Each structure stands twice: as structure tokens, then as C-alpha cells.
Amino acid sequence: MKTLIGILSSILVCGNLVLASLPLFVMAFVRLVLRVTGLRQAASWMTEKMDRIIDYWVGSNRLIFRLLGIYRDECEWVNAEALHRDGWYLAISNHQSWPDILILQTILRRTPAIKFFTKRQLLFIPFFGQAMWCLGFPYVRRMSREQIAANPELLTLDRQATIDACEGFRNHPTTVLNFLEGTRFTKAKHDAQNGRFQTLLNPKSGGMSLVLGALEERLDCLIDVTINYPNGVPTFWDFLKGDCKGVDVRAQCREIPAAVHAAEDQDSRRAQVEAWVEEIWQEKDRRLLNQHPAVSMEPTS
Image 1 (cartoon, rainbow, N blue to C red):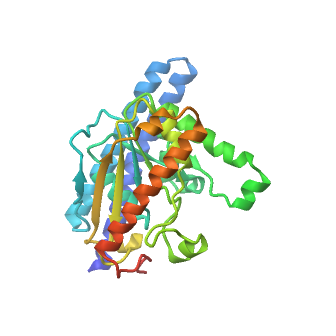
Image 2: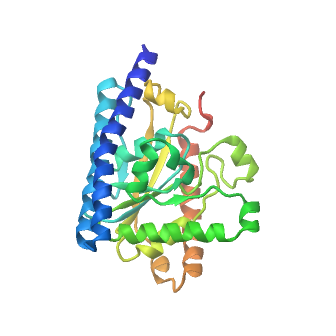
């Protein structure tokens, strides 16, 4: 029975992606024409309307999950009174599996459409990658230290891509999502980087610092999300066939520290952000350990 649910949910989710992408591609073409002809204000208006496609896609997925009994979006919110659809937010979260993205899109529905940092390799996924490109998601490269040392300009390209994306986000309310660990948690990755935390990878605050600098006067708050799978981390297939009913999610709205706002340049801002993120990650690690200290952080299959 679960296999049938998995097949049905896969078909519905993929079909929903195609249905959402087709009008998006048409709107992206119209926006391009508007920009070429110098109608910048009209192009900005079209971008805002394109973000509504995200709302349709997320809402339809939520309905699919509920009808098939795959997952119910329950979240413990802290200081969420000020959240609204007309604000600007930066959201951060731990990252363990592909379902994290669907869960985050579901629980953050009271905020504007989510634009998350994603790897350039995802551009080649049919419909999904092209849709994210049209919507202005910031793309980053997966690079080793050796690659950066050999060609430091690669890092500059990622920084510029983030800044350019944020310039577009300034024009209309947006929620920027950043997985600070940079990749999904596995024990092998944790051991390779000599992790400072037991349930998390070491956070990377460079992208977050750039977003805070580019959207400083726009951002209303930081949304700190902690996702925990008490029965073990599911694969995407586990999620689609309904083997992931137990998910503990906690989201907290945090005020951006005055020291971050007062930073005079990017280097000093990054230093302040690194210290702030270290405190957040220590708190997140303690919470995950207290919730389910004996549960493996590896995907179940």
C-alpha cells in the first residue's frame, strides 16, 4: 500500500511541478521582453506575479500531502506575531534530507515566497531547475578548498551572484532561505570536517552575511528553524510514501543584533555574524540532543 502511495504522490508532485512551471516560463519570457524594451517597472511587477506561482505550487503540494496522509505541517512557533506576507525575512535551518525543503515551504507559508540558495547542478533538473532560475534563486557552486586555492575568482563569482540576487529581492517582499551547513548532514561529512557540534555540521556564515548586508534595511527579522526527525532521517522516497509522519519543527523569529547592523564593512559584519551563528548553532545542537539523543542522524535508507 505504501508503495502505491509513493508512486501516486510522485506522479502528483511531478505533475504539479510541470503545471506550475509552464505559465512561469511564459511569464518569464514576457518579463524579458519588458526589460529589453525598457519597461523596468512593468518587469518588476511581472516578477512579483511570478512569485505567486510558488504559492500555488506549495499550496497544491500541501493539499496532496494531506489528502494522501503523507505529512501534516505542525510547527512550534516562537515570537511569530509580527510575521506577515508583506515583509522581508532571512530564514536559516539545519539540513538533513530533501524533504526539508518541502517541509520548510509548508511551515513558512505565512511569509512571502521562499527563495533559497541552491547548487548550480540543480539547474539541469527538468522544470525544477529552470523554474528556480526564472524565479531568481541564488545559485552557488560546490567547490573544494583546493579548487578555490587554484582559482580564487570562483569564490568571487558566488559572492556576486548572491549580491545580484539580493538586488532583485529588494523590489518586493521575499523570504531568503539559507542552509548554513551548505550540504545535508551525514556522519561521514561530520567526521571529515571535525565537527564542533554533535548533531550539526559546522555552519558557513558567508552567504548569510552577504544577504544581511544587501537587505539590511529591508529585513524584519531572522527566522531560525530546527527540523528533527524523531524516527530517523527519511529519504525522499520514504517521505513520498508516508513513512515520515513524525517531524518536530521549531521556528523562532530572532531580532538581528545591533552589532550586525552597526558593522562598517563586510569583514566586520561577517565577524559579528559568525559569532551570532555560533551561538544559534550551539543552542540548536542542544535542542536536538535533548529531543532524541539516541536517534541516528543518517537517512534511514
